[in-house]
Image (cartoon, rainbow, N blue to C red):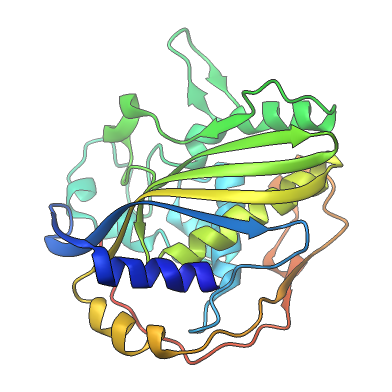
Length: 283
């Protein structure tokens, strides 16, 4: 929690104003931020200086793991995070690749589970990683990436959290996640929750111990219409201790995650928080 607040304060104190062409808004921006999450000791990095809705973040992660490409499927899991990008993004609405209402195109999990090969067929990046890690193998390339420049025009949004690298040291699994762009007041806690949960789940289904999750952000920013709420509300509040994440121990395989897992299989214990803050969202 403290490292999150330190990042926010750093942006407020040292950020540069940058015009964002996609949203038409200015962002107070810094380059390079590194966060760490102690998954081994289950220090769940949910924000306590405002109410955060962890189930929507985990639902989005499960949707990525399943390779979903439709906002309706994400809603069925319990998150509406893709509704606006799928249906209110003007450039995507005019894109000839869009298949209709709720279609997201070839983004995120689609790339992770069905990366198209130039020779035909697809590559399931995630299945390869799970198979290797389950055998105790780390070939220094246990990488899943959603960043496919050749298909940017076929999706509603370039991936922000774009690459995850798993590293196995003995029987302890670590994760390094890379994010090109981050809306710190609104989006970052989703990303923190997902990085933490991704490592916890992958360790559980591959039979390894969870270690540390490393989260590298390149462009960390606060939008101009979020700044007053950050300075005058969130940064004035004292954080509470980190809670813990309980994951159903019956989740034992990638197939389990693909089929029967729901948000009822996740619970946060000991979550104390301040009141919610309604930060504006930029499409």
